[in-house]
Structure formats: structure tokens, C-alpha cells
Image 1 (cartoon, one colour):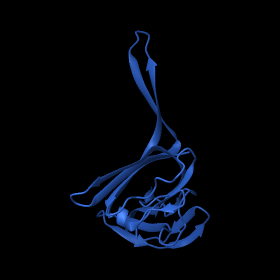
Image 2: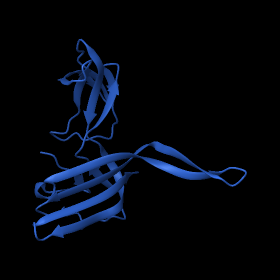
Image 3: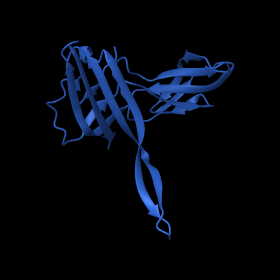
Image 4: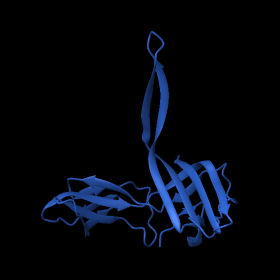
Length: 175
């Protein structure tokens, strides 16, 4: 079962019958000026920080309106991120979920593009050594982020009474 938690509140399954979560790098944008005054956009990522948008539809509200959005909260994400490598030894971020059903998973990508599950020969802290597979083009470890966030766009709620369909969305940035 896929679910996420924000600030210790698990969103009910009935609120995420249709669910989406996207990840973007948090970027700092500035305009630099040439001598003639022409502006050039300069954008740089902020040290691997994540911006995420979560949205869902279902037969229930998300139930997140009672949280204190002036404070940082823990977000247990429901959509995995991955790290690829030509090597079968991969280091993944420490900021990840460890609850049952959300443990990291290993895969091998074969020359024909197919993805096959593979196990771990060893795990030492954040370093995962995947079982080697003949014909592997590269290896991948997927993990579910668990990050401290500030919610930059509070949850929006909408209901379509004709279909008894609730929808909601929120945006958060890793601190």
C-alpha cells in the first residue's frame, strides 16, 4: 500500500485513490546584468535539496489542515527516487524511509533496457552492494525519501459534489 505521512499524519487511502508526487531540485535563480544592462538568468541548484509536489484525489479529504505550517515537518514520501551506477556498489542518501514496505530495492538494467530485481550482497550504512548480474548495463537502487520540509504551498482542497470526488495538493521544500 502506498501512502505518505506529513508531520506524523498518515494520509488515508481513500484520499489517494489517484495520487501523484513529483520531485525537482531546489534552485536559486538570480539575474546577472551585462554592461549594456541585458539580463541573464543564472540558476544554480541548492546542494541537492528537493522540492516536491504531492496531489491526490479520492473519496476523502487528506486531513492535513490541522498541522502547524509555520514549522518544519517530516515528510515520509510515497514515490521512490533512484541512484544509478555502472558499478554494483551504490551510495544512497541517508534521508530515507526505513519503515516496513519502504526499504531500498536493487535493480539491474540489462542491455535490452529491461529492468530486473536483484538482491544486496551487503549493506553498510548508506552503501549498498548489489548482487552482480551477467550482461548488466548498469545498476540501480531505489529508496523512498524521508526529509525535513517546510510547506511552501499549504494544502488546497476541492470537492466535486456531483461525483463525490475530493482533490488536494501541496508543495514542500527540503530544509
